[in-house]
Image (cartoon, rainbow, N blue to C red):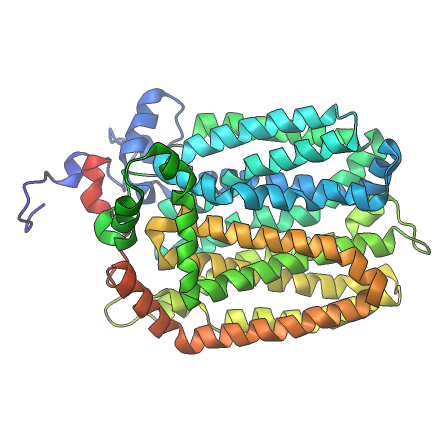
Length: 506
């Protein structure tokens, strides 16, 4: 390019143009072709240069892929009684079909992230969805509750890479100024599907039994696998740039070239990011929001499936819809608010700093949590009519959707080149918190009641609000200190600054 000292040929000579016309030869950006030539041209191009309709199509596909495992987990909430009756086990044992799924995700997330960094995004989607189809199909023929739980854990472990890699693919395709919107759409999958799962499970369970739920999940995963093979290009271009991430060279020197160490220990080095307060607070916020989702799902099912309500699976599943609508609204609106905030508070230089996403939207999310938790807890404690839970459930869904969207987008903006690793840590934290929440929800309700359980969560929500306030006050200094240590260039944060320079070698 002109003005550069290096003899690298101009990028425009290699890549298709971003703005095309129907009469041009480079029409691949504006049409969806399934031939190999178009796929090869897209693999060369910067994913951020895909046409907006095509990026939106891929975003919807990634969102559906991310919804598979959360939907599979919660779809069992409305048929747990039938599962316990089929295998003649206690209801607490049947609950493991859902709660242990979180362990499967948490135990493999870091290793999937390393594979996504080294082997690309599309490979993870193809392998992950294939394994989900396999293990879910085996679960449909489970002859014991142990086999059912084992297949569900293996299916969730396989799906862990899908959610993590999806975030990395979204980061590959969308600029910082629109990333909040894209992340909001994407997280409709992990957030709204847990609320829609009981509805789907109730419909299928009422008509054909709990095994029909697994057949539906396997068929859906199979259809998405076919769509990924045909539609999704590889969005990861080249390899991580050492100049953008000083920790990369440290990891390489420390681990050397031993294959065993590379594959089993390198993923664990992502945990080193926990030493940065900015990242730790964001991960804690996301984990707490996910814990609230799990506890809400468990306590709602436990309350309304027992006397005097005795709701059938379908009616029970419909009670989760207000939460789903809340997360849907928050994900769409929250993403736009996040993008507006980071653009509005950008300095004259035009640099977009991650901490500027944490504004009134984050405080609104915490306020909604503080409003929703006590009212929801005491409504469940005194077994109020079902409509008493509608507004609190919707407010809780909005708060969790806002918090998770903000935390995820800021994490990706902080270290774009390590999006998969940071999302793996986020997934580990969320799912471990979800597993703990799902395991203690019923014993806590039996011991102190739903009212006091939600009051305890309300106290934790106040602590979470304190963390958000601290990020707002000290976020800039935390970010600057972290970027200096990691060798991330402040003007464009590394990965986005040199995309054009790496296009020729992609």
